[in-house]
Length: 122
Image 1 (tube, rainbow, N blue to C red):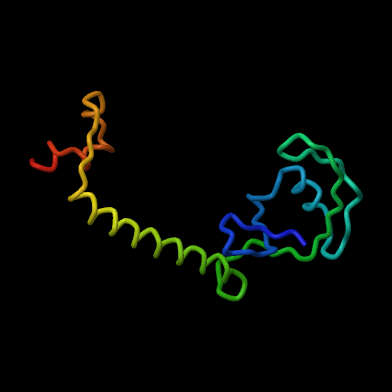
Image 2 (image 1 turned 90 degrees about the vertical axis):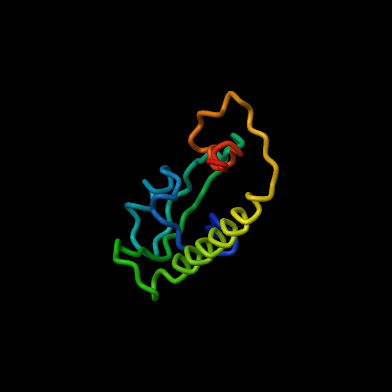
């Protein structure tokens, strides 16, 4: 069983089409649900060659998101937003009391202006 997880906590066998290796997608795209592919030579990220035999368990056609089919995605997105919010709040709270020195070469950088003591005094 191939488990897909950008975020390890959301382990699922559903792999979005945009996350599938293009070589795998070309094979799976022509397969029927329940069919098995012929052995196909693949090269992994380290350059090691091997064969893959693919089994297409199911296909979900493009659709509007719903809880029945997309619960894992919704859950992952909600958890990520909550984490981001809490981290941002913590970060902002600490930013005001933390000494940060920014090299003068970067004084004009818009992204770093919130950290500059000069702009905080303005």
